[in-house]
Length: 196
Image (cartoon, rainbow, N blue to C red; front, side, top):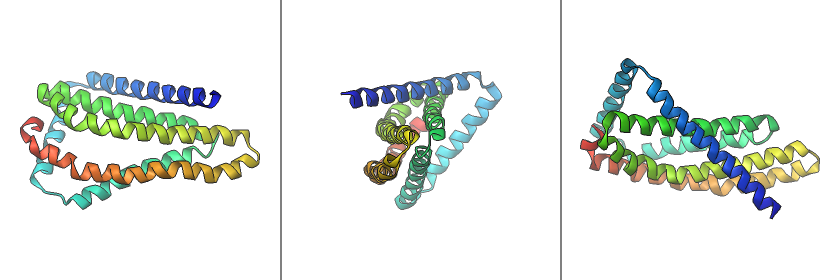
């Protein structure tokens, strides 16, 4: 029961940091000047048009997505090997929230209803899968970092357990990347009028 309460507190704290990041992203967007917003809008429109015109092979999209996910997992794993990495783990969560808040706020603020539709159909479904994975990896890393701080032989035996706990979530990232490569581009191409 104590272990359950501890995990629940960790996940609530992670969620709080994520929500803080979303809020910071939205505030940052509103603090941007109109010139910068026009530049970001131009960049997004150019990116969307380029994405829709060039048909990138799904395997390239898969490898790109997989690389990003595995790099993030490796960074979280590395941060979890020491007590000093704990602030970095929370920083990663805040940054992820910031990116979500900024992107969603930008789309809704600049594109209006079309941006809301895009965010609801592309960004939010992907985040609903990514965020639990990210929280799970961060929770495992935070638990191991706390155990490593206690020291002793538990760290040596715990390292293999740490890797074993991480492995299923990393394997899930292969599936997540495959879904992103196959499904999300199809949705984007299905509704080009919404994006542009």
